[in-house]
Image 1 (tube, one colour):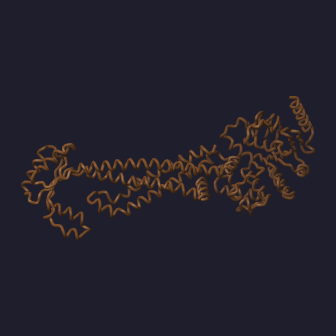
Image 2: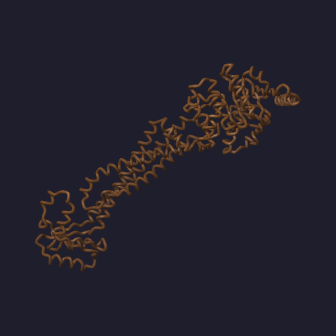
Image 3: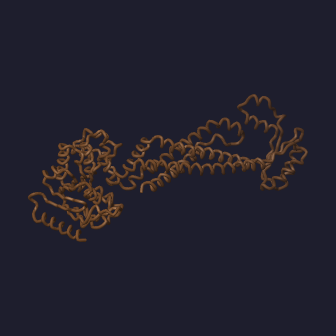
Length: 288
Length: 246
């Protein structure tokens, strides 16, 4: 308890140094939080697309139910299909209504007649998607085929790039934070050299002198992480209504509360490690 | 309680600040350590608290062989030996109360216990009304008292006072000496380094005199001086002669 008191005393005595340390930690964890949200979100979107039927074929308006059934049977008979789902014009209208329930103007303009019927096909093996897609394209009843493999691969490459940038930035900023905390604690130790010497002379052990400095490093890390996470989380919460309408149909938002807590817990652990290691190194370096 | 056996200390410059010094201080003794500036008084204190290691000889404090004391035991030694430093070494950004409570915090005493003990010591040194002041707000004598209080708060068995009357007027100096005498009467062994001849002469306590790092006089107080006194003198003279021959 006494160590905490000394730590807060030290922080109060040099607020600008404390501010600089917290600011750099905050920047680091703001970046970590943003990239965690982005990469996790993209991964969820990819999973969503991967779990959805990979090929969607839209029928011409004039296509008859018999022809559509025959095509479904033909596809099923290939033995490559995991599941096949027929979406009638009526079903399509229901889906449309569901997606746009908050926009009455859009609902008024659309009727079942202008929405095409479709089939959503997923295969057992991903490599069979191409042949199924070709088969559907050749069928005269089909007007358009959406092959979602392209979407998934584009998203995957974006997510990988984001992950790499995120990891790179996290490493660089963590190192910057580490060295800034090390320097600040080092300066504080130098400033208190005389006090430390006096404490030693009246019987203080090395750890009695070290602990407040180590707590100080951990404190900067924890406060910085909390602020960084807070700003990123509030931004995401603020943007959730806008993103929800953009990602219509993808069950991604709102982000569950537990996810925010998991990110916070992870960041606090990382921040405590960075702060503790940096200050411990400073203590070893300057408190010989 | 304290034993120096043929102790020498040479600094990196090659200069001997202590040469072949031997002395014993018994429990509850009050000893004056006198000598001109640079005679080695502060060096003896620094050796007794393991701030320095002797170049030669053996130092025993409270059954601890100082030279062989492992590093992790040094804090234990320093808790048993209170020091009033020549430059006081008070922490300027802490109040009198905080300065005096520091040794108790270091040994891990509880807050309530610290409060009571500090109040008790502050009353003893007459600083209770100044407890919330910072050192810079105190007079020279008050600062000296604060330093004595900090050295006393752990109830050490030995108190080393390095020129505690150094910059004080005569009246205040006597107050400090009176305070140290009281502490000594309560059972604490005291070694006081001083230049103040008046105090040394009037107090009639054992006097150890150093000059250029050598022990040149070790007088027991009047009445107690007898065989021992001449022995010490003869022994030291003999040692000094043999040193000169070398």
